[in-house]
Length: 444
Ligand SMILES: Cc1cc2nc3c(=O)[nH]c(=O)nc-3n(C[C@H](O)[C@H](O)[C@H](O)COP(=O)(O)OP(=O)(O)OC[C@H]3O[C@@H](n4cnc5c(N)ncnc54)[C@H](O)[C@@H]3O)c2cc1C
Image (cartoon, rainbow, N blue to C red; front, side, top):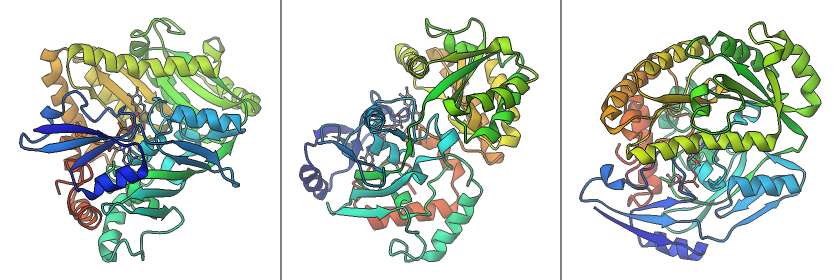
């Protein structure tokens, strides 16, 4: 296997390289948790060759248009976009925990994050996307244009049968396969397999003061009824609370700065103007969490603490030299308690673990932190959990995508409709297999 690197300094550079037709994985900040940056050889055929195309040196630009939409070109990070919008009195509506990831890559991975609770998904916040196609030409995609009856799909029936399958997952942050309803969906969640995104326009929200409250709870392994009471109650406050995150006691034990000892925590990001309402109508109404367990925290402090958790997990995994064994599962609200029971079974295996994530959306990351000899056991348990997720029509990878690491698992979630459409799109947009040829669309 041969892996080489190539860095790009301009769009002209990039377009002429694409015309050379070399199989390439184009990358932004390289924070993906589903690409094995230091172990590609374990996931690619031995006779393969791949260029790692570095987009992080491309020129970057960021401005607001007259409609307060955020216009981004090049490798602008979420942190830069958030700071820029804040300086102009606007709020970025998506906030992945990893702020150093690039916004345009976020389209490719259909990135979500904490604020999906209040603002929905990135694919509905994007207004337009420009990408470089396999001929090295720039193409504009607009969100208001439907893919049905468009020149992208000569075979309308193929799209209709695909969309019927997608309908089962309409309410999920990310289904097991991309949405393919609006033109922009061609680039959202397709992980760079159809072209390279160079520019996009996003809606923003007005900036209003926000604050965090956190609730201290018993460990979920012992009793998750207080957690579920909060889950149910927050659902009708999505206009007032923009994120609802769980960090369990095991996660805190990886850091030095737990806000409470020996307890789980649920954080709520609330508009200050809604504080009274949320306090009176939600927090005081909780029958299983007393007022003595409700605390306020500043947004800066929360962000520091929140980001530390997945980074600690990544460091621990790297130290052991194992591949990450974590979940990214979202389920329908009515089976959320069943998912917690499943996680309880995993917790009883005797392997170190933690649980955190986007609690308000029934979307959590359970991570095993195994030693090398425990890896096989973790892998088998996760495979059986994914079978359950499939049976229950849940979404196995609701934000981090498939990459190379999760490809083996996602295959079982595809039927004929998905395979046909992936083949169709790859043939139409990438007939030479230039763009991430080993991704989930390429093998069909
Ligand atoms: C600590 C931590 C926390 C995280 N939290 C979240 C979270 O809350 N929500 C979330 O969604 N993700 C999260 N992630 C995952 C990761 O940050 C996202 O997947 C992110 O979108 C990757 O951005 P990147 O710039 O690092 O992309 P890379 O890792 O460089 O690339 C990821 C994929 O995007 C494609 N790609 C990149 N740029 C382009 C482009 N311009 N055009 C076309 N394709 C492109 C690549 O080909 C590749 O398939 C987290 C990761 C870490 C390490």
